[in-house]
Length: 156
Image (cartoon, rainbow, N blue to C red; front, top):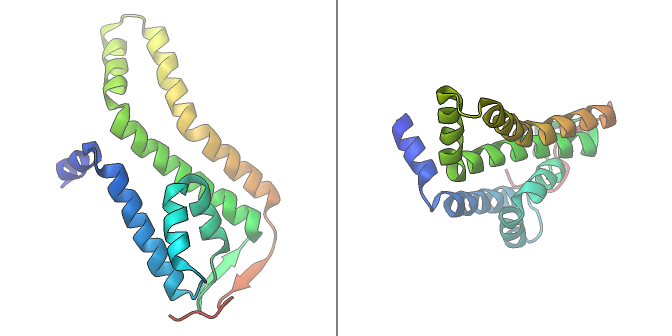
């Protein structure tokens, strides 16, 4: 099963297929929540998923029984941290895997191990630093508020 998952990540259709699935989920979710113009959101969110998916998740109408705490900025930055970290990790696995294996091979062989180590640290910082900063700023902006659904005319 793991081998099939890794093979799917290496497929050139991985990114387009993932965006199509994201658009489908956004359409179904917006239609169920009674949002106006679900088709537009189903197109806009996947095209600019790094920014629009967190915004959508932070502001989508709540259904009965759903609770959202912390305010808009906390939810926006928390969702951005998650989508950014997952997205960058998938892109690194998909497009930069040979470079990563080359760095690991360089480190194990010993040729310019310091330079290779710095490159690995740079890649790790690229993945984690924006997400950690977003979470830190979100914690500072977090409010003691709670929203309880429904916040719109939901059809669920």
